[in-house]
Length: 239
Image (cartoon, rainbow, N blue to C red; front, side, top):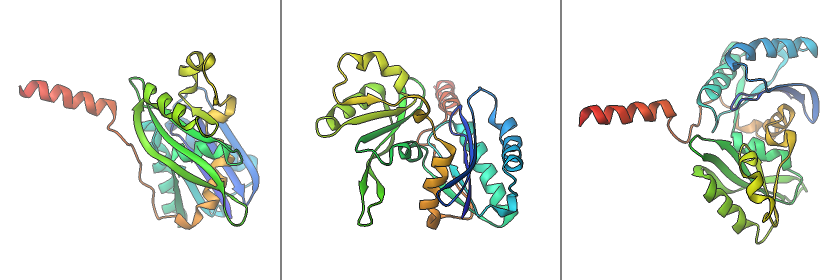
């Protein structure tokens, strides 16, 4: 099965193509350029580079959130357009689960994070356990929510009493100094482990292929900041 994976949920643009457990090609851009302008040309470039045709793709995987409201909409709309045009299906994936999947072979508690404005972060807490076939299966310990940085660190310290914990994603830079002197069994992910690798996204999608649907729907967790500000202004004018 050939999977085209798309992640536009953060400032990083990730596109990958896999077949089974083989990486055909992947492209990552972290250059603060708009996804709306770059996503389609980059997909075309990657397909051409690896000599693949869009009609040969079996399914399209896309992250549906949480994350950037605009970014998620762009990725989901593109994946749905692909599915409609090619008569294929979409595999919708949690951004935070896809991020945790970077550590699928580690014996850790994984706290995945995405920035949610105002020192809040979207977070999900996971671990991977071996099933009867010896495969690592993701287990959700805490479902996705938007909470503040202090509460995430409090959760991390509680989990770290029983098992090593790793913080992954956009929170790592914000807490680096804070954890330096009293981290204990809490560590911070480094480098490319803090964003979703395109091939990793595709591998997760291959496992979830049975959940493919005709279209994907965004998961935002909370309202966009612009909508919150609009509602606040509306309340003031109604007083």
